[in-house]
Length: 306
Length: 121
Image (cartoon, rainbow over all chains, first blue to last red; front, top):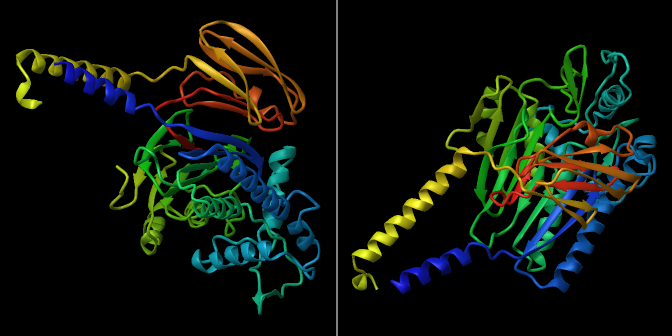
């Protein structure tokens, strides 16, 4: 009898012994929360400093709306020399042009800027018909377009988050959660899995909880940054074909191993209808949840996180 | 140990399992209301708020004063200095796991949710 009670008490105690260190960083237009479990304080503090410098560096490199960022300087003059970090990120983005059949085009800045100004300044609906969006032309590691207008918003957060995750792993800090807004990357979990909630695009609740470790979960949706005009919602993910905010769904969530891939893929899937998306992901080792315009939840075939 | 168990032991185990199932059931049908709120300025936890007491709080954010109100177990930001006032427009929150983020002020109000480790939004 006593043994049984003792065993139960022990079981209860083991359930609440998860010590972690946490920090909030304010970069890339979002709050980035990082938790590290099972580690010594000095090591964690050093890691937090390094992680902050990584996000800060990429923020300074890629901020589309900061005239002093390296990206803005490149957009003003395509012939300047840029850092290898920015170049690798641009090349990563350009590869997605082919992978997404032109749906994810990082040279879309002229269009995203017009829609951004519309949302922020609440002006009349912009005339986007005459805005021409080209593909980047990269020959021998050089951009050969006369002008570029690159916006890395669709890929930068996931790409940098993946770099941070790899840094943590190399430091022997394998138990972590990185949450950069719509972009989550988790390492190992002390209890064998993390509960990762997915926010509903229509209410303040989570509509799904993903249990897993060593995964990335990324959501794209138009519900967080939008502007309502004449009864329509105008958000920040622009379809290069229609030149208007994409309207195929309310949100799409991609679960996979690599945060850079999940981020690029979630934007790509947001830019195509759900049936096409189901076909598209056959080439990738990912699981997907679509939140439809009719508030239905559709999961990819063989969904692995039930 | 299993061999040592008598009827009373088994009865106790069954009762405990039943209680656990009932608690699990209650948790699953009720949305969890938060009892406390944590307020952060950047990284620093600056305030622990009891949502059971109706009260107004003032904290300092990046752009000055941020006024937080607790009313009927709910919490909201009523006044702050920012370009779009997104966090005061958000209104009341009360469910565990919800948060209000005043990005320009670096003020975060979090209603802790023990069930979820992190949330994608």
